[in-house]
Amino acid sequence: MNDTLKTLRKLHSLRTLACACTVLLVPSSFGQTGTNAAAGAAAPKAPPLVSTDKYALKPGDKVALRVVESRDEPVVLTVSSGGEIEVPYLGRRLVMGRIIPQVEAELKVEYEKEYYYHATVQISLESINPVAEARAAIRRIYVTGQVPSQGAQEIPEGDTYTVSKAILRAGGLASFANGRKVRVVRKGQDKKEEPITVDVLSILEDGKVENDVELQPDDLIIVPEKLINW
Image 1 (cartoon, rainbow, N blue to C red):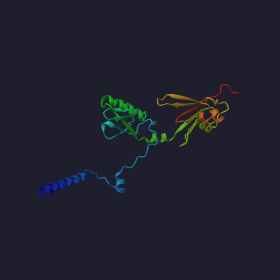
Image 2: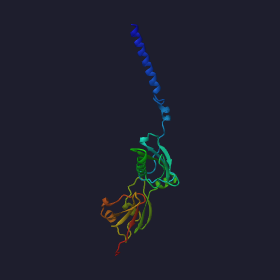
Image 3: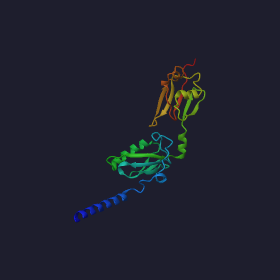
Image 4: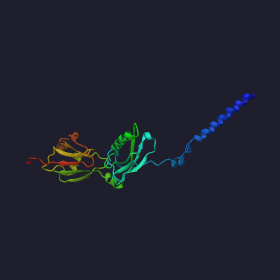
């Protein structure tokens, strides 16, 4: 009987100790509700005003860089006046004029040469230079050639802005315009020009909207003149 009682007391002691350990291991924030929990949570960040897949980094921008395999916290880096960031272990690297996916790919190659068998580089845009942000918020295209009103046009927010809309906003095609061969000059990611030919007359006169082309910021529309004007 005494042995049984001793065994029960030992089991009770072990259970008490286990409960005490469990309480010690629970984070201090566990079970917080209401204003206390809200106060402990970080405020959500507002998303940047530009697409990070298209935005070219500029001096003054801030990015957060992390290599997943290192298990370190992300480091926030500022693009210097010379267009560089100080990359952990790699040193200064030029990023100005590059988009984030390009920088991630370049750093991945460098990290895997020296430090990792496999490196997953993650970069997020924390903030952008206020001057660059103001410019990026205004999206423009440009129309030149045989239209009554040449010059820049702002792309309306939330609108699918096409070549035909831009031509109509410029006053339509002039008398001597070649509406069959309107050109859109666009610069690709490699900075090379990518000309696109649009038959605007087929859109405006025949209603073939499938021939229209959606414009991107900084596109240049050139309306050529007819070779024979009579």
